[in-house]
Amino acid sequence: MTPTMLEINSKRLLDDLAALGAIGKTAQGGVSRPALSPADLAGREWFEARAAEAALDFAKDGAGNLSARLPCTDPDAQTLLLGSHLDTVPNGGRYDGALGVLAALEVLRTIKEADVELPVHLEAIAFTDEEGTHIGLLGSRALAGQLAEADLAQSRTEGRSFDEGLARLGLSRESVLAARREPDSLAGFVELHVEQGRRLERAGIDLGVVTSIVGIRSYWLHFGGQAAHAGTMPMADRADALWGAAWFVRQASELVMERFFPGVVNCGEIELEPGAFNIVPGEARLGLEFRHGTEAALDEMEEALLALAEEAARRYGLTLTARSTGRLAAAPMAEPIVEAVEQAAGELGLSYQRLISFAGHDAQALSGITPTAMIFVPSVGGISHHPAERTADEDVINGANTLLHTILRIARA
Ligand SMILES: [Zn+2]
Image 1 (cartoon, rainbow, N blue to C red):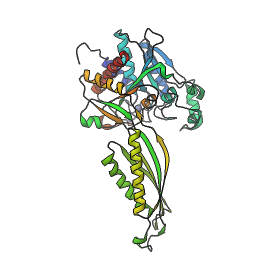
Image 2 (tube, protein in one colour; image 1 turned 90 degrees about the vertical axis):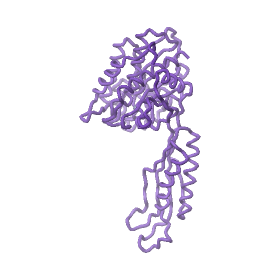
Image 3 (spheres, rainbow, N blue to C red; image 1 turned 135 degrees about the horizontal axis):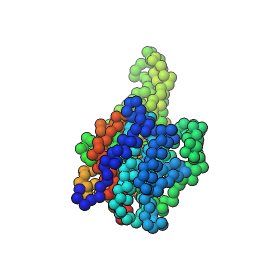
């Protein structure tokens, strides 16, 4: 780093992380702040107090997204968003989400204290319910205009507890749907987050520059054979549905490793009919899910995996039906912002590598309406959604300084 470069206040950021980590702290040393719970509310109040302390403007939208704002002199200017989420999974860690929100707050404080004038408003945002206690990416999808009444009816906690949680924040389903922001009012979004994997740690690299967030497709593969007596039916005459399914599972993993790296495939569920020790399986229903960073790669994987399932059926004399059970589109990050992250990291003398995020993030929703990028910092041992989740102080500071200089670059572009 050159001596004249602006730097965040690292002690203040680390103190904030520790203070927020004490809210909803569990006996195992983790954090439980499920969205809209009393602990989440306490975390929100704490964040609001930090914004007030820093003399930043504060706002809460209809989806409960919290914003600390540093306005510029032009009231008609666009807003550059940076942030992540304050909610956690039950007994989760101190860094997932929290790091991105607190680093965003620290970036605003640093820019304000240095009296740097920018042609955009800056907004450090904490999105509601990223983890999906009620509805995954609730706040970011609401802001991006990607939610409808039907989505709100599918709360994982069922209607009542969701509505009670919203009411605790003075919100309603109507207000959530009204939280949509005009894409033209936004200049972009940058999210700093822990990697939650161990690619960076293994490679000894300081930062990950996310190029896309994975798309996910899933299928039920139904192999049909002939149920028969497990003793009297000669082996050579069997149409064992599990033989086809089992062959497919092994071949699919090899196919994906060989042809579709870094894509992943998983067969995580299987049901056999009739399903007994002494009956040859007549039917096997196999749950197939695969993920990759682009829709083009997903299309190719889909074609190859379905062809492989057909081959499995042919080999073992089975029928095959494949039924799609859902798809989530891959979310590409915006190349100019990706490059701004790389330039900022380079300027700071940090090593970086491009990678795909295999977990979902608020950036996924935002990428649909504004140029978006993500910065990853290493997770010790790749551990996440667990009390032992940790990122080294040095990496926290590197990530926040990279966020700061990325924001300065984009704002001035
Ligand atoms: Zn997260």
